[in-house]
Image 1 (cartoon, rainbow, N blue to C red):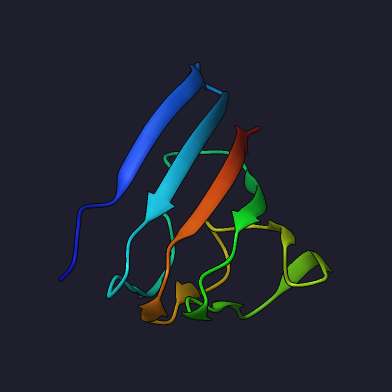
Image 2 (tube, rainbow, N blue to C red):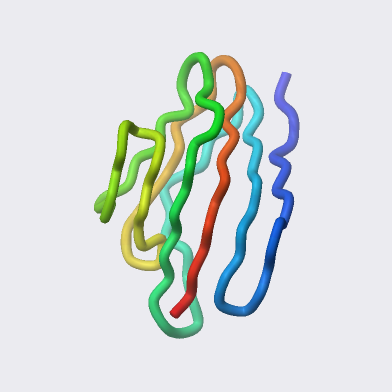
Length: 99
C-alpha cells in the first residue's frame, strides 16, 4: 500500500524555502538533478524520521553528510536519489537556497 508524498511549505520565496516532506512506504526517488534557471542551488536536509527499512539517500557528491541524517548538497550539480522505502516513512525538513 503506497500513499502520496506530502510536501508542506513552511516558508517560500524566490531564493529561500523551507519544506516539511513526508515520503510513505513503497516510495522512492529516482536518480536526478534539479534544474535551476540561474545561480547556485543548495539544499540542507534534516531527516527527522528514518524509515525502518530502505529509504536511503544517495548523492554523487555531498558537501556535508552527518550521521546519514543531515545532508548539505548541490541538487543542481550532482545526481541524487532515495532508495525504495521498504517499511515506515521518511520525514525531512528541507531548506533550499538559490543564490
